[in-house]
Image (cartoon, rainbow, N blue to C red; front, side, top):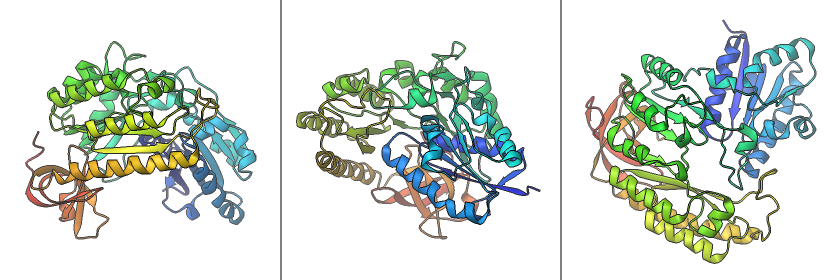
Length: 447
């Protein structure tokens, strides 16, 4: 029985969630079981994100709150891992003096030996070196007990050099896992009861361009689509410039591939897109949206937008709103521009005042709420296949799950439905979820 306890808190993207699961799997071999209560922990790891300044502030605040636990238990080890750890390195100790461990994105595989060394000798340890091949890509993470859906990392890194983005500096260049290795992991997950996998990478569309063994992302989707037991496939995140015709056609050919794509636009202005070094024009983005909808008419399209990028003028912002009205995204993740150290945009001329950024973000988010409400209301009266994930936050009388288009649905039901695809007639629509009633069970997805 495990005697030592590990508490992991994860900030940021789904890839960080997957990395946290890998850390837990690694440290389990060193005798660490997991706990949901940091007060019980012998080791606390904070898996960090560096994509925006607000995330860094939250991480430092959370690490600061763990100081009291360290004072109560001097043997407690506290570590920062991931992107912000990669960026700050030993500087992290100056910000958080009670920190014991800093581990970057390429050194996750060294956690067990570093922790063991600290347990024996004490002190502080930092490792942010780059590896030619990221060894943590090979680590298979165990999904949470009872899960029906999980993540599978297919690649890491990026070579696009978007002007605002720190990923190439923190995750390194692209590295794709071999197709056969990914398939082995997916088959193992299917044998353990997983029915839905989400494929992860900084830019999944470019899978295979580095170390892919001659296979591209469309090949990988087709291969996973044939794995027995896997009923749904999702992926994130996509770069519009790498959305190939073969990949678009996959939505009409690979049956388990869900009718949803997250396709960040970032701006509707060609001038701002050029400043961002995004590699496409708004017209090209719209053409790919049209091709997606031709291949899969019911596809849900979500996106990212940054407001207030340096040099963004009022006419640029209006171009973004115009593109939103044309596409009518199902949902949108929108942010004020945040300068990140080391990026091409850091220190760019013509910064947008903070008050203007805030005003534009409010306007943009209000427009998107209209579009999301419109999209969700259009589902009322339809019957949707919902993969039941577990109890709803609404109360014990309800279950919750997602449609193939990634919409959350809450409905009256019992725990016996978990893991099944049930047919739910949608009766109500809200901004962040739908509500419905079960009409059938066990029929599988209709697509």
